Image 1: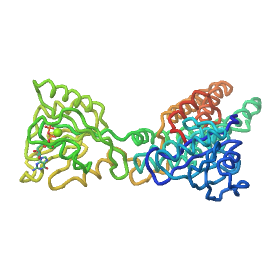
Image 2: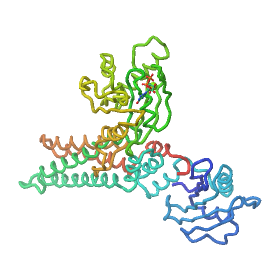
Image 3: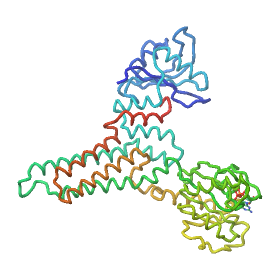
Length: 455
Ligand SMILES: Nc1nc2c(ncn2[C@@H]2O[C@H](COP(=O)(O)OP(=O)(O)OP(=O)(O)O)[C@@H](O)[C@H]2O)c(=O)[nH]1
Ligand SMILES: [Mg+2]
């Protein structure tokens, strides 16, 4: 285990009222005493002390700051920790950090504080990842999911599943040990029923994965439609800013523009694209190709047609390029006399909204409809499942699920219990890897690489 003492600026860069420099490791307290010569002894743990910080060499005062000492093991990392809250800005926090380094600390690597917390058993691996997710969260819903993981929501479920597997193994050993008895101590169907229950629980967790993964990046929501339909205008209205250029000239938008927004607390990547039409213009054509690529990858398509216009065969042809649910936006509703078109001539629509970027009509309806479409399982917080948001977790739970299913099928298919049981261990291993009970170094590298320095 690491025995050196690390230090880093834990607050974000740039100007801020205050900043925090964190020190963790065996000589944390000595470093504070060197930096704050007026302190005769270490302050009591978990109390804030105002201190004058000085350069360890020449004693020049750097800042007046607040220091808090956390004694091992009652700290974030489990080691002795000192947190120095100093004035923010570009220079001050760096001076404090350099003083810590001069007094014997080493600059911390990205995620090293949390990695130490994990290695000392203060957090499991799911919680450590959740710390990074909390910091990266761009939407209330993703933040909530991460917080849930921090609070052990997912770990508790996976730990319980792992215990069920261990119990299954024990039952089976019992069964194998008494083969000659007429009445085996544990009937096989009790074991297969329990295995079925474990598979069902894994399925319930895995069912949250598609929406959980969307939560991380945001649902790719693509505005498409013929030129001049008013796509950029609705895009701007939803963003609440004039992000895209709007003109009365068809073919205004060329490059795709992407912005992330929260609607109802859920993340969306809104993309405005070039109007779709047959075009000879080289730049416009390239823009249309980009639009078609976005249509292919979209999670939701917002297909824009002016409310007063008719749908064309061309519209239908472009719509065939996407497999995503399509919402028809009948734009410029303020200009239309009333619904002139039977919107059923577009097949399989996920919804239709009459919208006017000018009057604001229909915008709230879009804001409500999109979360219901992209996150139906999570809207309203009805599900009490923790949400799977990480590929690492999803992959492992899929392995566990398929192994337990193979175990059950083998038993039901009449294979000897010894053979069936070989599927239990890999399932347990998969769950243990998610929790970080057993880890491979590369997994740790991948997990902690995505952290910022100071966390
Ligand atoms: N009356 C009215 N005019 C609108 C509305 N939305 C857009 N317009 C006008 O329609 C024209 C085209 O709007 P854009 O938002 O640029 O349309 P677009 O679909 O992005 O067009 P391209 O980028 O060329 O494909 C502009 O002159 C807008 O002012 C609306 O809700 N009501
Ligand atoms: Mg446009």
